[in-house]
Image (cartoon, rainbow, N blue to C red):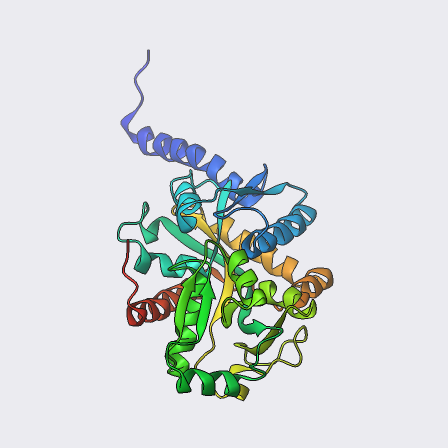
Length: 326
């Protein structure tokens, strides 16, 4: 075999390195070239699942490549989140995360993944929280509810989907902002908690707008306030927190997309652009508005700052509520 001149080695190494990089670069620019999995870390039928399926359908239409939802429920979303964190970062798998994602570091002592193992891509939508009471409740306004709660400390109750759930911490946020003494009644899920307030077993429930709106429109519960800056078109009679006298009660229930660490930046940027384009479509805008939700589309860096801020905010709520990590 003839020897290779020493002066030719750098050229050969450059060519070899370039050739090795070409497939990766091509994969980035051609993405998506194969079906893309969106992992929802909860069971089908919830608000996170709904948001995921709406955006998946629109992304499939825009790109001509299948974006499909896969539900991996369990352990407050940690099973699905861990699966994505440990997936190959090739643009084939993403996580649909939500507000609970920002709460988990304060609720679980040792997560099965490191926060840095998942990187932000963009937001899908965010929806305010809604404070509801049963249709037959004697409390017709927030003032009436607060007055009764302060007159009878710990007598009034608020329901939740379980200790550490978003409905529980939403109720704790209400207590802290309103300086109220309410007794927590945990159920086995958000659906049971809603039945609890509908039946009058509990006095109050703080839940996401997409969950509350159908029950309000169905006449089963009454909305006393929404935590959005402006009133919702879907609940025009419900005052905002500021209008009701709780200016600091401004939490939202948000949904976004995260990717395994190492996912090429061109892929993240393209997905963010496709999501933003999808969220501008009139049909999707209308569908989300009917759920009380506002479209997202934040750039990756801004979403990362938002998640960091949310993690700190909910950490303070959890600490003040005395919830101990498991």
